[in-house]
Image 1 (cartoon, rainbow, N blue to C red):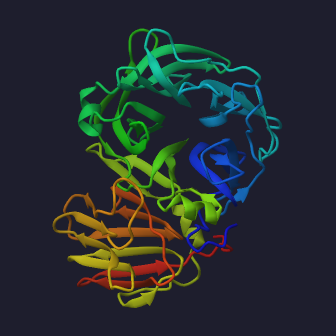
Image 2 (image 1 turned 45 degrees about the horizontal axis):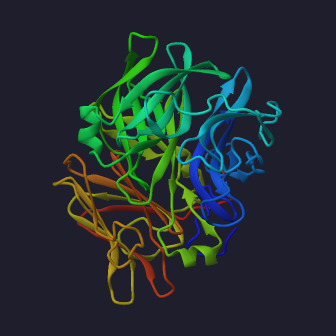
Image 3 (image 1 turned 180 degrees about the horizontal axis):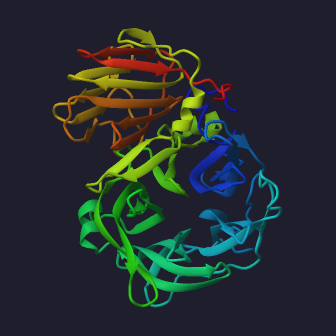
Length: 463
């Protein structure tokens, strides 16, 4: 792995090269598998394969040989793009987007099967020679078509595909794929003209990428989409219900929604539906100059696994997966407010009873990276003005609003340059913050009655 101090050590990323979208989170024989978009040769988005890691506990990950490789002259010759993994009659099967040299945004839907389903590490995959869907359905003027996601509803298997239309309308297309080798177009699940979707997402996106769906504890569904406006933009969610469209298909009726992650460095989330919960991973891209990325030799990282659900009002419920606590050492490095050096990776919980400022990093001029929490107003502000970004949104503070309460709990997972902030159990913020050699990483918590606990992850600890 890289010796770059900004390189995350506890999150999933390949030893070198490029990583983007998480693909196919899947549980098989008591082992979690996580695939991802990967260029093994250089840290740029090209020559995309599927990388592969697995874990028995969601905290410690083992890297495996590349799962999917572009086939010269095949439907995926220019890249094995995003998709999912499903159990097809006892055989783990990858369902993914294949693109050729002239794809112009239109992919095909391809399958690859685990060569040995009895291999709990699923190290070898065999692609089928021809796609199961060769392109978008006729008559809809689709100009963007990719990212299949397979799910079960009403005792059948269905798939979502992200789409964009020539008139600038984004949509999610629905397919009946009860027989995984025989797909039938079943209509438009939802498009950007829906008033709830427009009210939540606005009208700037021209395509919805990486559609995913999970079932909540209360029986509703949550539709996740990545908003494409010519470039990856942000992510959103809609809570609602699936219902029959009266023509053998399904429709999604949304009731509420919002921005999925409030940060600027999060995209293309993927979910794993378990019997009692749903887990989510996202891609966090680089936010430093390309010459620094090339010099480091790596780009991108997947987030920590997050447990997602919804509150009764339809708003997001989110928290880090509890399995991450296995990385905690025997003793925390901080248990009370004070001035404490911060390691390169830490798991910090702060509970504020009054307006509280959490300082994490400062530069030689004394400017600080801070998180300010005010329970009475229900606001949390991440302010990183001294650590400029190279992205289009600059370094403006990020403000998160949650219900007012007597106290407000923040949890910060920092791993190298990856910062993941969880506000109560209602909001998440993913940002990349790169330490410079003369920056001072020091924790200072200023707030009456604030409670503080911090852990430095231990990669060797289990349980």
